[in-house]
Image 1 (cartoon, helix red, strand yellow):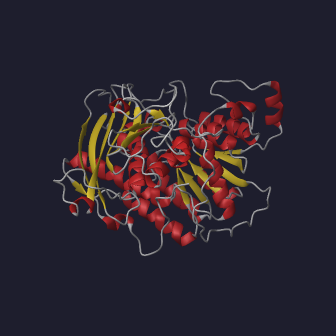
Image 2: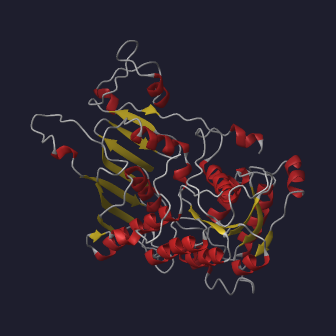
Image 3: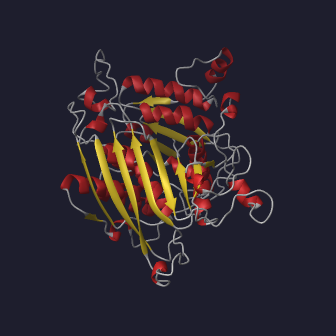
Amino acid sequence: MSDKVNRRKFMKTAGLATGVMIAAGRMPFSYAQNEKVRVGCVGTGGQGSFHVREGLCGATNVDIVAVCDCYGPHQKLGGQLAQISNAGIYLEPGAALTDAQKQKARVALKPKGYYDYREMLEKEQLDAVVVSTPLHTHYQITMDALDAGKYVFCEKTMCYDIEQARDIVKKCNEKKLFVQVGHQRRYNPLYNKAVGMIRQEGVIGRMTHIDAQWHRNNDWRRPINKDHVITPEEAPFIQDLEHHMNWRMYAATSRGLMTELATHQLDIAAWFLDTMPTRVYGSGGLDYWRDGREVDDNVNLIYEFDITPEKRSFYAINARSNSQDKVAINQPYTVRVVYSSITANAKRGCSELIQGDEGTLELTEEGSFYYQEPTAKVQWGGQGSGAPSAEQAATVVTSGGTLKLSNKAQQEGKPIVVDNDKSPDMIQFTQFGNDIKEGGTPKANQMVGLQATIMALSGWTAIAEKRVVEIDPSLYTFDFQTPDPGVVS
């Protein structure tokens, strides 16, 4: 990897989870020590090229041997980026290769290009497929790849339809393969640290509420090259370039904000709470852009999660007033998750606020903070009995010296610090390769993908049909053993 990558200071985790071992297509350690996983990338547009450039370039255990995109310009760019990635070069968007990097890239493995992924599956010797195509195509490509004996990395949301997602879980069980879904926060050291702070250290006490939002102020459209003439190779797959490029805007190919944005953060809620919601209600509409799109440009929802003692997120509390029923306070309780996504104001950006009776974690992919409540048991003082332990000091770092607990703590966040030199995208693809080679199960496994699909589409139904949607547990249960969706590294 280039010095450029090593200088990029992301967050660090002590290690990458291998997950539980499964009887996969290859037994653990069947790969030679220096053998790389051979991958074919299907879809090299915006997200697919990002994965090649930002993630796979740092996965030194993976080679991209083929790329497939039915749109010629994307296929060409994907092939160029994949060859650069195979050379272990991180290339900033818009940056040019140096002469030394050009020479290094020339001798790297050059992937073959395809328009039809089925031809790629037939002709290439692949271990795995990376699927970064429009949502409505995920199911068939993933099922065909599994039937061909390939492991799959599939972008989120895993499927357009809940029954499709259930079929993928069944197919994984049948073929003894896995699907890793692109919920990259599962591989972000900050988020893994935060789960540990809550479950093992109890720094926020009992989780009581989660607020999450993804707010932006743009039309969410991708530019179209109006001069492009659809070629004979593209014609079987592309009838209209506008719909092909802006598939997120149309009902036949996407569920809009719920599947393209919400699943990232709904997955965080289910992960941290270690359970699925029981019901959801909400509202949304197409009220601002009105530019021919068919999906909502704003959504607001409430998900209710019932927390029972067997869940890893259950937290027993002591009575804080003489009026509290000392038995009832530790019976099952409900945590409500409030989610919003809008496209006409970006003030609040993208974050998750994990709130407890003793503190709050504010999480983003760029940085995260801990806010202490005056009710917190931990006192952040100087020397003496009120001083934090070494473990606590390592978890929560204050700036500018020590800080005594006060009501000001509600406004003064302490950064959560982890030390890492890889981006979450690099981590997730490195672990993808490791789990294939070692017989592991991804943290963002097919059950994670199914659960996120259920949450998103249940929310979409609640908005579309203007009713409370009860989420039936039979949607995410099977008569065979499934991977744990709540693993923490």
